[in-house]
Image (cartoon, rainbow, N blue to C red; front, side, top):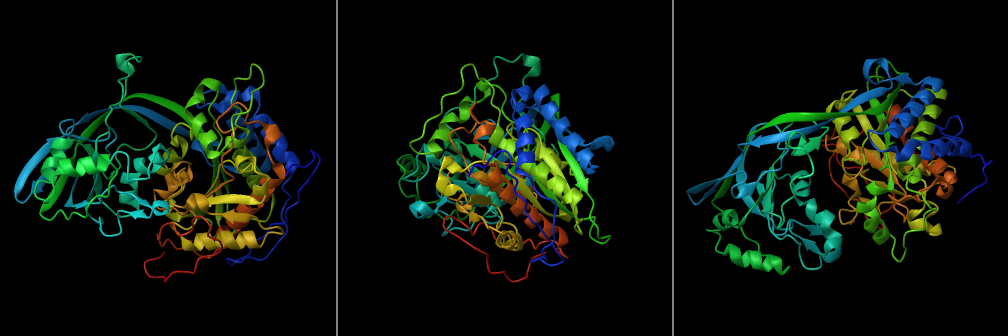
Length: 560
């Protein structure tokens, strides 16, 4: 709930050598400071903090100047607070292919001739394995649909059909459908995926001069090994299913009607995928992450780290906001967009992610001015999250500190409001990812919340694999999670001002922000004083809608 401008919330924060920690006084986190910093970060002067803009540069300089004032060590390039982020425009030349063997008969399909590889295919490599048919490739609890209940795609090439998903799926489920390949690889250990090609192909860049046209843009390394996610046409699938006992045309027709697809063992079918692409970088655009380090106090632990992050970019002027408007309104049933001020064309991004930006500033100052924990703390304000997680992807591929020495990454994105402005949400913060890689991390965060003078309500609805917003993959924490780093994503959810010119400072709940800062601080302190890195048991999402509290610790086998 909103408080007066002069209100000050003093939060007593503490940490000790164990996971539970011993309370110790810490510098206060002031609502006034959060308001002062955000009033500048979300001002018209910063032009909506669009990537590559002058306004984003001003925001970076503002953050860095405060880090210097507080004695936070520069951790960027050349002794500065800035890590250069290179976003490359790339053209692909592909010689990749898929070879299918069905009962001793073999056919090869080249990229662009029956199969289509993504333009960013990664480094040259070969993937071989059995094929496994996974129906629609969907697990969705609300519809009691689980294509993986009776098929194991681990170590195999997962095959799935259906452009619109099973019965009950609508356009609202598109994020789940679009993530099928990633889900099969990350959650079910498939080595590659092949599904039906989309009915429409992307339009060529006719408005871009030929010399500047690119196939994709990326901040990631081009020499990484990427598990193939391939689409294919009818000729490919007709051959693939030719010895299955079920005609492909029948399967395709059933999928188009969203009917149940049969369990179909593909015995005698093997697939070899030859990834063979070369890349030409034709343009490079530069932006900057802001990076600061607080060195740990323990000589034996200070070369291990807790990473804390937020993105400080936004979407600039109004013309950049159109694509996301419907999603925001749909997320808040019955609500419509507010009426902007006359002539207002700047998306100030007070909540997205001005709120995370200044919360991270408050955490940096609190740790810099208080007792140093045993482990070091790395603070990263990521650039170009709105452009495709470019700042975090670059950091994850070019880390300032070794990722295997990072205990966890705590990501703060939109923590300044109540979801859909519902007063009933005043005590609620949504957590995503905490349990997926490390059960111990989830429990540390639960303990930190329980130790607060006024604990928050920790809601795991958005961590549920069935959540239609698919937030686990949509903010900077995912860049680190995809490298195996345990993560927690803190958010208070969407509202009708999301990606709109009315996301302004006067709607921010500063008292709630300060309480969330206390929770993140408590979790970071526990991580920073733990005598080991949290065990990475990789048991996946277990906390979903309606779930509460700690998780029983799993057996230590296979953990770290």
